[in-house]
Image (cartoon, rainbow, N blue to C red; front, side):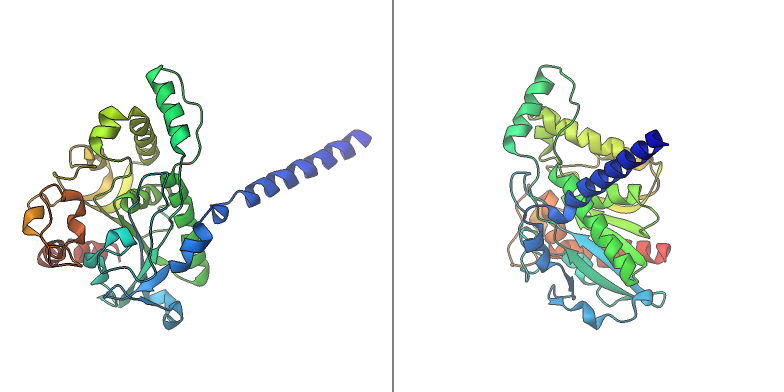
Length: 315
């Protein structure tokens, strides 16, 4: 009996310590998140934030959660409360998405939520250490969380909160690193989302870096892809461009193997024939990754209705 009591005591202590550990190391404690998350908000068609108090009929809402792109891991992503229209470096929502504010899909009304998750990721020192291990051909057992992984944790945490509030028709989406996070989360939590939309998904930097110059980022990218491949189904709409310096239709060809994937190669759009959404200025030739910030990308969607048709197909 004494041995059982001692065993029970230590079991309770162990459970307490485990609970304490996980509760004190949640994504809510990421440095800088509390400050920048204050800028999380619903956005109207002009990219202007408005209060969630205006949304009362949650069961008849399609909640489109949009996630911004990212800078390198050592930097915190900017996410201004009132970003310039279409200016992704302020954390703005892509204009092609904003135009769906209040649109009706089978008696459901679309609302767009801009989710800021601007945390820092791995330090430059640790990145260098892993790079040296790879160059020496040594095994990498563990490493700190990448910004991409932190962002996925933050996003799914916010999604849980929305579900608790009564939102159940949720579509996850994003641009660049936000698009990559959306696809990964869709693959891991298909029961929480109706679908996913990704514009030019990428997170590991320019392809010449992760593919050759910085094999540590090639390693991180492969780890993320392996996570995606744990399922054979990915209900998502993905836009790709051949002149994207980060990821191209070729480097993202693995996505074509998923069931229910919808790949849109919009390489016919030339950056030099597009103007930035926030200023009347032509994009440079190498701006393939940034075309979703342009007026011509919005026009392209309106002509082809890829997003509209996808949303109608999942609701």
